Length: 166
Image (cartoon, rainbow, N blue to C red; front, top):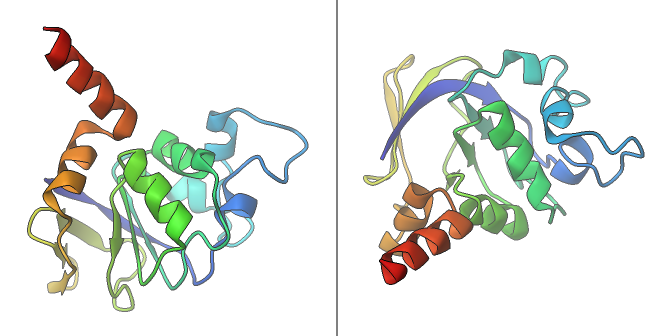
């Protein structure tokens, strides 16, 4: 599985419950409305810079204290293809995988805003085409790769049910 997109940078300790969720918002907007303002408080104009297929490159502890699936759904709605981070809060990592969003633990320190990235999910390599560097990460187990290819756990279950029913 190869993904290509521009890097969109976020700092350490991004709490997606605050920046990409309805948890603290009394307005209770639609996913589309949240997608248009995601991460605005920590990176003004962030959502406006995102193009379909772009890749978030964050620092340490991405998704800190976050447990809400809607944060991943909002990023997917905006077109984010994958998230790279030095480390993830466990619940946001699991939510990402469950919803078919590659969450890759790797060194993001050399990636710059707007760099053209190519992710080889199967081989465990991030190629920063702009800087001509490779960043290696531990490849996903086969079961996780299948889950990501299927688009998440719900699509995978529906696919398996279809096979069983057919």
